[in-house]
Length: 278
Ligand SMILES: [Zn+2]
Image 1 (cartoon, rainbow, N blue to C red):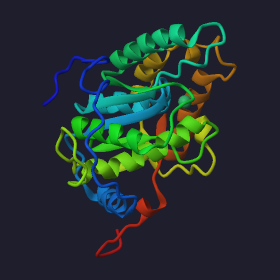
Image 2 (image 1 turned 180 degrees about the horizontal axis):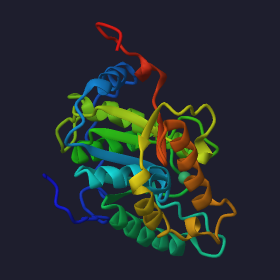
Image 3 (image 1 turned 180 degrees about the vertical axis):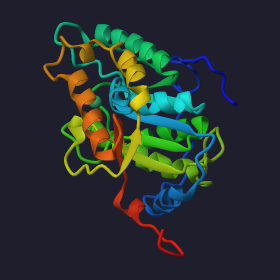
Image 4 (image 1 turned 60 degrees about the vertical axis):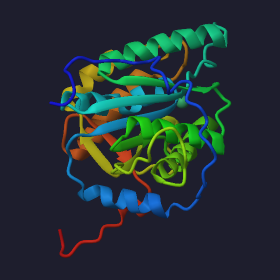
């Protein structure tokens, strides 16, 4: 097994938190390269994976994809979370600075419980914007982490930070693969697919496409996500834990499993070209 059995959370790992904005490279907006990359993903062998889950706020990646990450970690894969902001603005009883400290501690504890590495972006809660600078930053993270699979927010959301994250990540995936995008790290062309997480705030137009059995990983997910006070209850009125456990059961029921995590992909990634019927 390539990866050691013990979790190595690297929250403050460097190079990433303070990743320099790379020198200007050519920014290509076309989704065609991404389309080709995602379309090829379905037939790629499932081995030696690195799963990078990118959330707008600390807690997003864990609540939606934590069980998936725990599963892949258990299978020996490397799993990494990038929290673009700490989501530090959501506690009416604490200042953003104080709650941000708390969220960072909670994120590190959750990562440790999942056996994941945690990385933190430099943005503030509510201020994430779909800028070229943000895409360059995330592209550089992708070049360093070298994911085989990226999971992030679906395109429509109640939260502008989530929608910005979707666009930033898609632009970054393309940039990271381009020779013309110059940064301190070589281009990364090993990505097999981009997937979108099943998030209650991102539900508009989200149709589950891929179901992954997480029956054996739900306990690890619960242990991890309850590192967060807002998930345990008491900050938000939304019943996070109950909702996502019930959602995993509902997705599992539709997949013929006890618990499952459902993911969406871009419409162009659903195109399959075969020599015969499958
Ligand atoms: Zn969020």
